[in-house]
Length: 146
Figure (cartoon, rainbow, N blue to C red):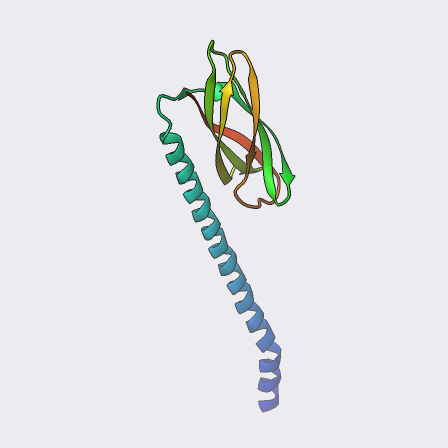
């Protein structure tokens, strides 16, 4: 009987350790997800604050388009084009959100496109703050003409 218990303990030991390891991995993945989510939230909050600093800006989201994303080194980039429909030069401050294919916010950047002539377009590059994985899409979250 003692031999049977020893054999059972020897066989069960790795299974118990594996169960603990899997639980630990799940917890680590969950914690990593929380950290990334928290960091993304902080970046989005900082971007919103930056947009709020623009004085006398008017909503110009319809003037701005984001192109497809690509990679540049370890960062995700997208060309952003601002088209000025007004009759005088304009500057644009633009918030670009990078989202995954499920719509989750991955990163946010704010960029300026200055001196866009009346009836003309000007292009700038939105570059993620960190390395993003998987399929990503750039969206114009907010654009102000000033």
